[in-house]
Length: 83
Image 1 (spheres, helix red, strand yellow):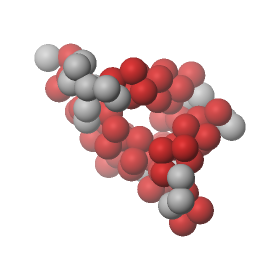
Image 2 (spheres, helix red, strand yellow):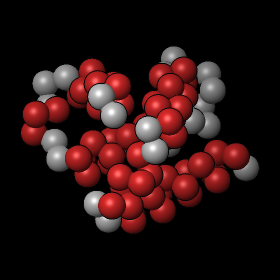
Image 3 (cartoon, helix red, strand yellow):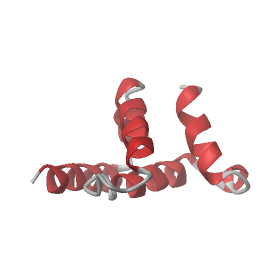
């Protein structure tokens, strides 16, 4: 799981020391909102974050720390993007 937080830490640089794991997941879910904009310069980064979230099974961690609302928001974003 060391690779995954490093991407978030790079994104949040100066603020990451003050973030809880739930706040980190909130930032990650917020980045997924831009997945429908394939012309964005950040699209590749968002895809990489999505791939990392899937490979380290972050949803399991989110369920364990009871981030149910975030999981719901994340999947709503995915479904809206697919439409």
